[in-house]
Amino acid sequence: MVRTFNLLEHCKYSCKYHVVFCAKYRRKCLVDSIDVRLKVLFAEKAVELDIQIFDIEVMPDHVHLLLELVSTK
Image (tube, rainbow, N blue to C red):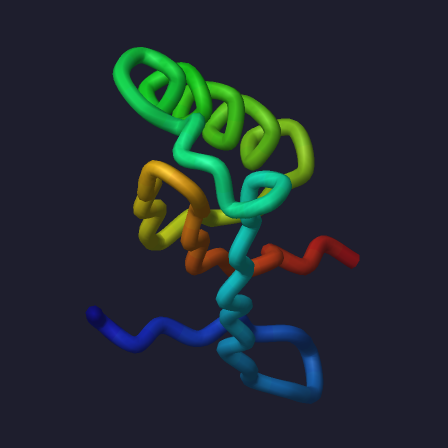
């Protein structure tokens, strides 16, 4: 991963978040076409909220997201 920094007038930062979503009771429900649809929904929401998704991994019972919030003044 290339390290990039966000710049503001008086600071330079790179703040990434690792978020994990789990299905209730860790049931294996994120399979087949559900994982594809979930990636599309996350991508749409990321554009809406001005979030950059670096990595997304959908497992049968949980989802890993590595994302960064892009600051706008």
